[in-house]
Length: 63
Image (cartoon, rainbow, N blue to C red):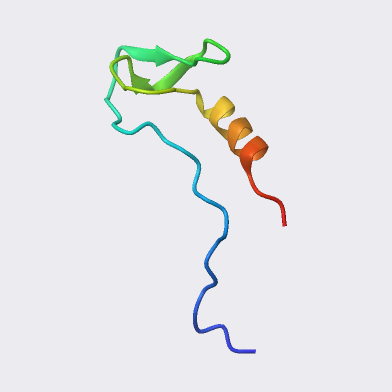
């Protein structure tokens, strides 16, 4: 078999904050309250790396 072209994924990429603002101060995770990698002025939902990974696992498509 020839693998010249990679296949495209049918799953959308996990959502990330629209505009990341650097810290410190760092925002707290909206699910567990731990510090995140995002500054407090980052708009949208900010999650810590663990909660981001868990959210990606929950929303990943199967197949």
